Image (cartoon, rainbow, N blue to C red; front, side):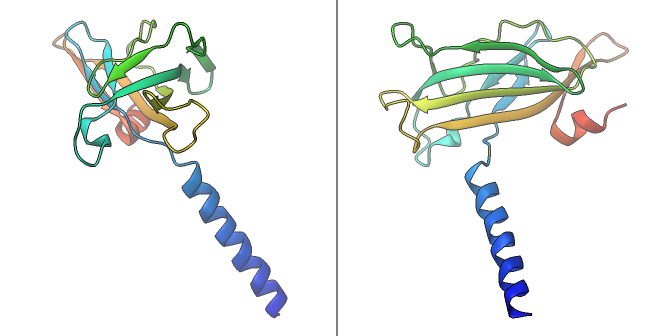
Length: 149
């Protein structure tokens, strides 16, 4: 009985640790005047609320049930892609109305080796843009985007 309890406890602990280690970060998303999203890293990402520069390693757009729609990698060290907090990331993708998207990107703090795991972060957010009857656009995020019908 004690062996089964130990195995179960070990398995639960392992699941908790793995989930904690691969936790993603949540970017900020707002709509621009043209109805397209501005996806950025929040200022409060830094404890001291400092403006920082981040090296963007990859950006991706997925659609639920379809898979990856678009991807751009910035692995070429001679052409780095840097952004500051609250600066819109460049997604060369035309987002459509009423589609449930998953936005992903990976960043490191500028000046750090990309292989240094301590500053490498995976960002993910769910979103949907809807066009309201009056012609204006509305951004739905996370659960609201998923549950919209």
